[in-house]
Length: 148
Image (cartoon, rainbow, N blue to C red; front, side, top):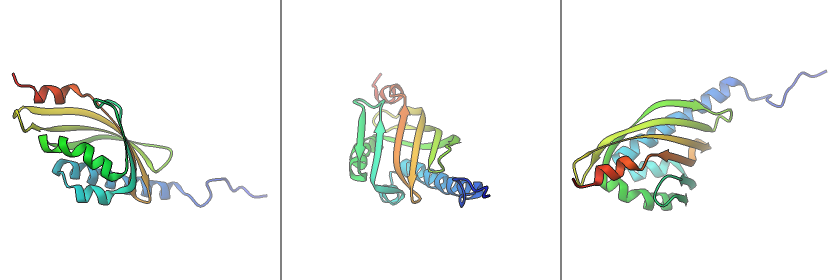
């Protein structure tokens, strides 16, 4: 009688290694956002990247890296910030990480500080980001861009 399960061949160590690799990719992605390094961003993502920004105005669903670059490019021209990872929640699926992170930076047109809190659901395929659903509060960006 066999005691094999449907998880044979996949040990927790394999999943842990995959999660660690994916987290390193996610951290490199966050660093590249802060420097607006689109070449690095593209190398970290699949060509068919799907991004959902449900709290942007208007809410966006972007398919393909070029669509993502076009959508975030203008924001990265008017905001300079660093993203700091505060917590990572691994999914049961080793190719899913839920991240909590913050931004700390400046709105270039006004010189005002820009700080925000985010939750991102990062999905990975073959060691690259293939999906991101990012939740953030749009009010801090509006305040940072407002002229007093």
